[in-house]
Length: 208
Image: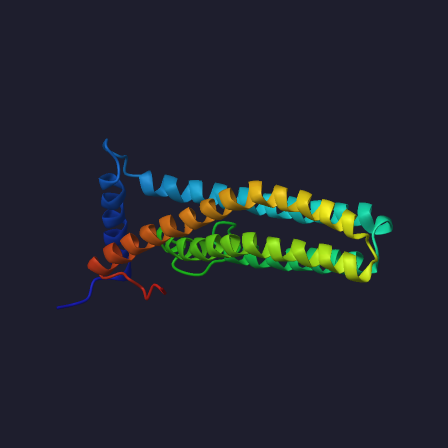
């Protein structure tokens, strides 16, 4: 028996994927429901990319404002954190390249791009989840370093440290939970997609 043409494989995958999202709805879904989902993913990822860029500019502004008000260690540590933030933003933009239309990898089908972006969305969510914990370590290092190397008085270190801790206690847990839920949700969606594409013979070696 002859194998199906690649175009037929893609059509079968699209029909199977339509059925997946139809089953997840309580009402009938239009044929272009999956395309709409891909468009929403692209919009959200582009919005997150813009937020990442704004975050780096905020760090640069804070570094500029505080430059003449802190000691050598604080300046050095803030510069390191700013550079790291820029590097992470570049990496995140790389992971978002399918949603940002910076890559032509794959067949050009929205299913191919959806598949690859779901894989990268899992990586993004896990990275965001881990970075929320790294922020605590970065803040501890900043205050301890200012105390030992910049001769900041102990009462000032404790006061500023407690203020920073209070802010992190408010911000970190919700952010960690949000990122963790996203990682689990994208994993479920990817597993469902892998199963359907495998059934239609179009798995195309989806990585884990």
